[in-house]
Image 1: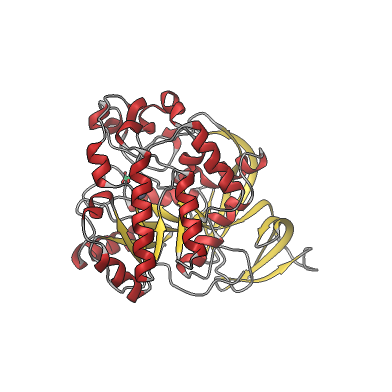
Image 2: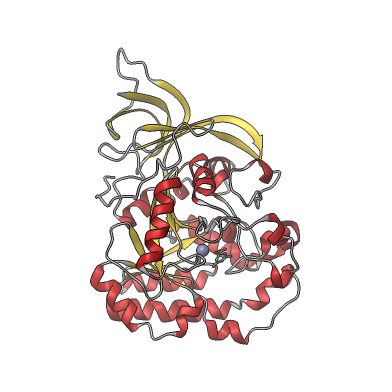
Amino acid sequence: MTCICGLTFLPSLGFREACIEMESGLITRIFRIPPPSSSCMRADIVLPGFVDLHVHMRGLNQRQKGEWRTESLAALRGGIAVVADMPNNIPKVDSREILEEKLKEANRESYVDFLLYTAYPYLPEDDYVAGIKLYPEDLMNNLNEVFRKASKMGKIVVVHAESPLVLKEADIPDKVEDHWIAHPELAEEIAVRRVLWMAERHSSRVRIAHATLPITVSLVQEAKLRGVDASVEVTPHHILFSREDAGKLGSLAKVNPPLRPKELVNELKSMLWAGMIDFLATDHAPHGLEEKSRPYEEMPSGIPWLDVMAPFLMTLIADGKLPAEVIDMYSSKPAMHMGLGRGSIAVGNSADLVILKKRRWRVHGDELYTRAKSTAIEGMELGWQVERVFLRGVLAYDEGPVVEEGFGVPAIKRKTRR
Ligand code: DOR
Ligand code: ZN
């Protein structure tokens, strides 16, 4: 039996002094004060292990960008217990053969637990398959069949909501500061309206990935009120940066969907403060420094996040820049969404605990585990550092990994207790 005491993020209560006992991989007791005659270890902060619904770990034929061993180590250091990995690999994960190839890599290399999405139109029953991901080019198809199938299977349809027709009609800019020109707001709104309509007609679960617009959140809210099983995620970059930050971000400002104007970002953020957004998900997207330094048209899109998540979120919460509820949006809520018995510090749940130490440090891309070796918060001072991470009750990280690669397993479905 292991026991930890500290300022703990508890479901419904927020931060409280508490002691947590774990045994055989599960949280077995939670005390208000240390249990008598116990030898509990002391922690500054205890958070639930995060569940990131949207990451790109790469591997397969893109190991130069990132592989399960590097990116899952980044996840572990960031306090993430479970990652759900997107299928836009080379090759795409649109067949049994490629899915099994990816599963093999993840099983062999991952430090954290995982779920996998498949690519259109492939959607098998397997438990470790979180759902199907639709990309803009997939939206060229008649989507009735895939929504019908997902509905029958109870799987989630996750959508990168940008209408390919609008994207095709948009102008092509020649510098990263103007990247937004190629991705009109209209593209998102049209795609969101369409897939919500699909989900409503076929009674399917739909999740809008990386929402960038207030109208997206409003449309999802309205659909929920009509009884549609719809939800929406936001990334850290779409709520913290606007297109006016592109100069400062350099090549990391090239991301899809793009960064929006400041007024819209502020409105989206106030919707987050108002509890209108379901999930925080990073869209961690590693690309090499060399690729990112190419001219605008040739540089790939995406921002890496995983390494910094727990200290970054704690720092923003402590500074009043984000509500403490973002922890729920990145742990208990996504866990519940996926039917996992984890993501909140509650008796009976998996003992996934992130221990933070109060210690100031500056973020530098070249010191991170991600193969991207870059960060959108280069040079930022954070107030906490991840000291230890327990995964399924096992000490997996102690100022560095203390389990072997391959410790991660497919995340299994179980009801979450709150
Ligand atoms: O910026 C992005 N990067 N948007 C996507 O949709 C894909 C992602 C990636 O795979 O790098
Ligand atoms: Zn993505």
